[in-house]
Length: 416
Image 1 (cartoon, rainbow, N blue to C red):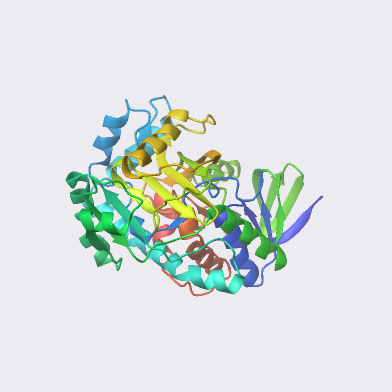
Image 2 (cartoon, rainbow, N blue to C red):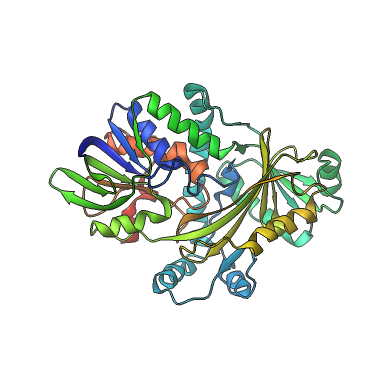
């Protein structure tokens, strides 16, 4: 079988499907190639929060010192498994160089811009496409049990305010009075009223449904094995034969660098950051909005259809083992803060590889080396929350329209 499309998108997660939908809406013929099933990667198991509040990048002053201190604590929120991996340590050298206030503030502006633009687009997409994914403009609360943890985050609020992110500081006693799900002992909370939530697996399934209804093609169980750059287009070698197109988009998350290398293109500095979550039936008493239990870096999201604990970041390469100690850390962390930390029945234990660039900004745009190869990858933990803005920006560039926002901060060429 040999096909020819205008655009092939490699990767059937939130970024790939949203980008495909935006391109179909722009009149392009689009084919999505997914190695497994749609939404089976890092789009599946995250906590589904849409969080401009998370504009601050991972590469922050003091992060390297914390990471080194946690290397002997396998269930630490940010854990680097000691091993010989030259690519990882090159990545970390660049990451460490950015752990200064100037780069941190600059990245915050660009990360915040994409998060805020995407957040503004979500209600439009939900309504226009009729996406049934438990979307709610709920806000998100950061909850602190220590003064030290609270003061650390409060110092960031002035910078978030400067880029237009609203916050509300709530005294611990007042917070406990308004949120019966938390145990006594809350020092304070920070509310981000502009944040929202949805159920990510349902969101991705709905994107796939709408894409198919509008003429997009999705091939599941169709692994892309390599890209051959040809005159006037590209050829993607797959498990089921060649697929030809004028343009190809690498939206395969943490696997995108391997595909770029197969075509001899510029290196994409993306490392897999392993995240974990546990999904339960909904407990009787749940927080009224998503909460981040800050000292333990655990995110808690309740939907009508379920309840999830998630987070943590483990740099362990593409290790496919389920680390039960890290799953246990989610439950232990939730038990410190919540009366009902887990649900009555456990439905799923999950891990996935988040695609992380060392500057914590995604790569969106043409890959240096060929005008028909594009990237939409490296979104870290923000793939769901950045999906609509990424899709719009990518479609604008491929279709040669004036972009809705400045694409320069996300260009792949910044790493050269």
